[in-house]
Structures are given as structure tokens and as C-alpha cells.
Amino acid sequence: MIKNMILFPILIIFLNPANAQQGEWTWMKGSSSGGSAGVFGTVQVPAPGNTPPAMYGPVTWVDSIGNLWLFAGGFSDYNAVWRYDISTSEWTWMKGDSIPYQFGVYGVMGIPAPGNTPGGRAWGFLSWKDLNG
Image 1 (cartoon, helix red, strand yellow):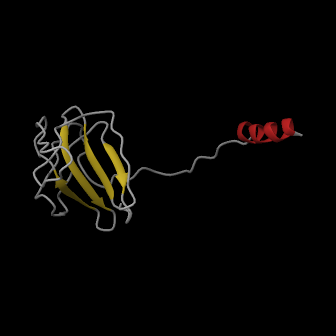
Image 2 (image 1 turned 180 degrees about the horizontal axis):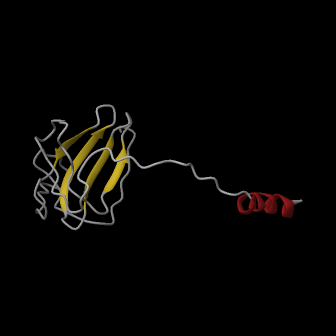
Image 3 (image 1 turned 180 degrees about the vertical axis):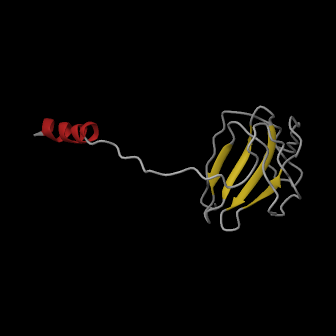
């Protein structure tokens, strides 16, 4: 009996063909060429022309109201945080530098401060969303 309970789910997994959704990619915004410098605009001001720079390996997450977020990444080592509002189709440069390869300002350990910002970085990010979003 136990053998059948284990074997049945395994058979279902391997014998049931996976049916991927038949979707299509849609180019929504941004440059069609690699290495784009992006359009930063003004910090914390959404605008139709804002676009993050080309990035490789940024960290991404979705907040509690469905906005998409993007941080750093790439061959250019940015430290910028971007937010994409799906309802308006606009990017907002939230914080960080518009120039790659910047050093961080870390302040005092354990004490938040408006001037603190991480240095530019690339690859290997992890992210999470806490209970406050």
C-alpha cells in the first residue's frame, strides 16, 4: 500500500505531459539595443520617458500592491532602485546613482539615514519582502 502511494504521484509527474502556457512576449518599454544607458529622470518622480539602464542579473521583487521593483545588477555595477507601476506603465527611479561603479555610503551600522546607499554591484543578489511590504 505504501509503495503504491509513493509510486502513483511519481507516475503522474512523469507520465503527465507538461503543458506550458502559449504566450507571446510583448515589448512594453525601453531600448531595443543592449548596453542602454537608460533615462533616469528625477528621483522619485514617475515619468513616461524614464527607463532603467541595461542590467544583467539585477534583483527583482513585487510589492504588496503589484508594483515591480528592480535593484542594481550588470556589467556596469549600478546601485539604483527602480519601481515599475503596471497601472501607469511608468518607471520611477527611487534611489541610488545614475552613474555606474559608485562607492557606497554606509553611515553608522544599524542606524538608518537618508544619505545611506549601497555601492554599485553586480550578480548574485537575493531579496525578500517582509510583512510590511
